[in-house]
Structure formats: structure tokens, C-alpha cells
Length: 85
Image (cartoon, rainbow, N blue to C red; front, side):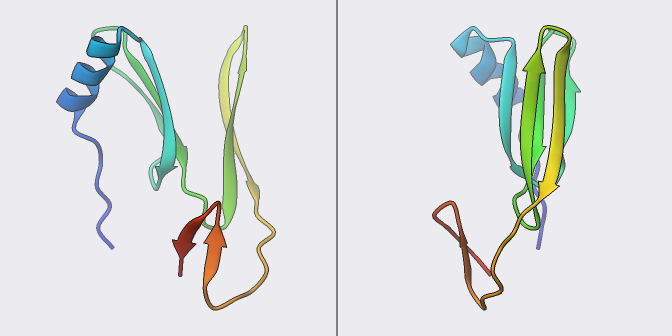
């Protein structure tokens, strides 16, 4: 499996076009917080293979966490409507 990242220029352009400074997205294999020189922040949550990711936002800031998923053992699993082997 090849892990692809986002195109930083495309993300910056999309955020600028939408006039937002924070983008939260998930289902990647590289959870992280990215900040650029234009005061734009991108919070990336992890994939939902063996654990579920969530973001907690408070006045003090953001914190991402993961907890194990309880998935029945099947040859083919369906998680949130998406096929997963």
C-alpha cells in the first residue's frame, strides 16, 4: 500500500478560498497537526482500522485521541459504510 499525503499548495489554496484558518480531516495513516507560515492549521486524525480517532476542542486548545474499536471478526468488515478488508 502506498501512503499519499495531501498537496500543501492545494490545501492552502482551498483554505484561502474558503476563508478559514483551521481544517480538520481524518482517515489518514499519518495523524498530526500541521501549521504553515500563513497561520493556517490542519489537524489530521488517524485511520479507523483498529482504533477510532476523535478530536476534543476546548478553550484551552485541541487534543486528538484514539480508542480501540470493538469489531466482530469477519472476513470482510464494513466500517461506517466503507468496505475494508
